Image 1 (spheres, rainbow, N blue to C red):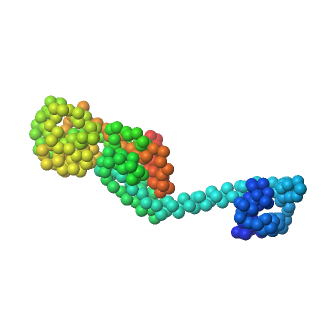
Image 2: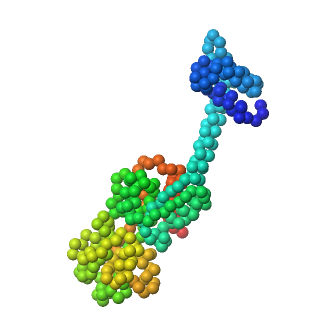
Length: 307
C-alpha cells in the first residue's frame, strides 16, 4: 500500500467506527451515512489494503484475523493523531496567550530571586504571549487569586490562606534601618528594646503583622506602608526607623544615606512563594510560566548545593 492519504484515513475511521459500534447497521447512525455508502467505503478500503477485514451475513458481523490486526493498528494510529493534534493545539494556545504576573515590590535586587531568568526562558520559547506584570502587596495578590482575576503571583505572607497553593522560591533577610543622622544611632550597640520604643516606627499596615515589632503596643506606630519604596522614603526623611530588605537597603547604605541599626534580636527572614489557586486548571500559557519560575529556582538551589 502506498503512503496514507487523507482519503485513506477517512476509510480507516469508517472501519474503526463499524468495529466499535458492532456492525454496518449500527454504524449508520454514528457515521451519518447510508448503509450502502458504508459498504462501498469498506470495499474500497479492502481493495486498497489488499485484504479482507470483516465478514457479515447470517452469523452477524465479525472481523477476520487480518481485520483484528488492522483494527489494533488503527487504534494506535488514531491515538498518535489525537496526541499530535492536542500538542499542536497546546502550542497554538500558549503562543497566543496572555498572562498577568503579580509581584510584591522590590524583588529585582534580591540575588536569590530568579524571576527575571524564568521570564527570559519563557519568552524565548513563547515569544507571542503577552505578559503583564503588576506590583501589589501580598494580601492584594492573594485576594485577586481567590477571586479568579489572576492566575499566579509571588507573595510573602505571614499567614497562608485556604484555597491557595504556596510553592517556596526564595527568601530575604530584613533588618531595621534609619537615616544616617537619626538620633537612635547615638545609643550604644546593640540597640535594646527600650531604645527602640523611643522612636516612631514605619509598620507594615493593619493586615500585615509580619515584623517582630508589629505587635509591640508600646512602639509609636506613626506611619505604615506595605510598599518597600514608600518605606524607604519615610526612612530617608529622618523621622522614622523601619524594616527594609538588606539587598534593597544596600542602595542607600552604600551612599551613606541609610544605616543598618544593630539589633539582631529584631531582624527576621521573609519567605517568598509562587502562589496559585488550589485545584485550578491553568491556561497553557500560565502553566508554562509557572513551570519556568519553579524550574529556575530549583535549578539554582541545586547548583548552590553542589558548588
